[in-house]
Image (cartoon, rainbow, N blue to C red; front, side, top):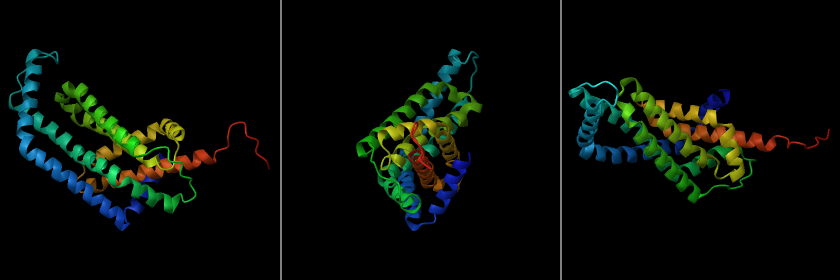
Length: 248
């Protein structure tokens, strides 16, 4: 946990730079505009569609107990849309940031904290695009599989946080290491930092729901992922090779 908090602390310091402040604003504004436009035209329609499916499930006894939710199901549909809308805005901002901003963020962190770290370029634009596609496909699959559970009130926030935590770490981890690590190094670091990456993903998903504080979430956690993973890459390369004789 100390490494996670250290990465977030370094990220907070980096946020004070004018370039990072600009990256914090414009992707979020673009995402808000796009999703706001979609909500204006489709929110009510989608809410009624969800409520209709919930009603079918409850009347068919898919939850083992039959009950008539009435307006409660419509309300539940609106709540679910809110739970999806907020992280969807930040996910869109995150994807925009990964395409147009992560390179600049990596350069910012590497130049100040890891200037000696060799760049072995194990990733690239094609890999980043494929990673984003896999993340979106995984999100849709997880949302579809878990959809019947979203009508259960205690699970509403937990499902959304779990799904977007996975997406967050999936998108950010690749772009954080693509410039410096080889493909083999990336695979090894992702495996050994799996728990830390998910914790950062959960914290990102939770911060997205905090008014005003959520504005800094994409850039803050983008920087935190970069700090965490570049530090681990640096440590990995400095670690003695197994079987190597150390001369005193």
